Image (cartoon, rainbow, N blue to C red; front, side, top):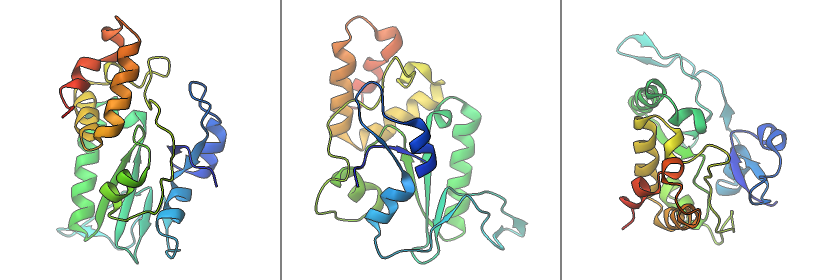
Length: 196
C-alpha cells in the first residue's frame, strides 16, 4: 500500500483524491493504524464509548478511533480543529475526559506525516521503515493551511505540535520561506520560533 497525507477514513481519503500541490495520495488513518498495529483488529470508528461516565455523568463523545485491547483513542485533527478557539478548547476537554476514562490519547494533526519518527513519537511503536516516505511541505497558502489561516489558539497549537517533529517543521519552513514576501499569508516567523 502507498501511504500519503492523512485523512480520517479511507473513504474521505479517496474522496479528497491526490494532493494537487505535491501529487501525493491521501490515506485513511484506519489504513495507517492497520500498518502500525497489524495484530489489532478491534478498532471502533466514530462510536460512543459504552457506559462511559466521569463523576457520575455520562460521557457522550465519539472518538475517531478506539481500541479496547490497546486502551487507546486516536483522533485525527483536521483543519477545523485549528480554526476556532471553541474547538481547540473542546479538544483539550475531550482529551482530558478520555484520559480520566483510562485511555492513552493520540492526536494526529493533519499536517504531520507518519514517518518512523512520527510513529514512534505519537504511538511509541518502532517501525522498520517510513510509512510516508516523502519530504514535502504539508501546509500551503493555496489550501489555507498555514498558521495565518487559523485563529490565534489554533496557530499556537499548530506551532507547538510542529515543534515535536523538527524534521517536518524544517521542511515546511523552508517551503514557506521560498515563497518570498508572503509573511502575511504564511506565518513562517511564528513557526520559526519553534525551530530548535
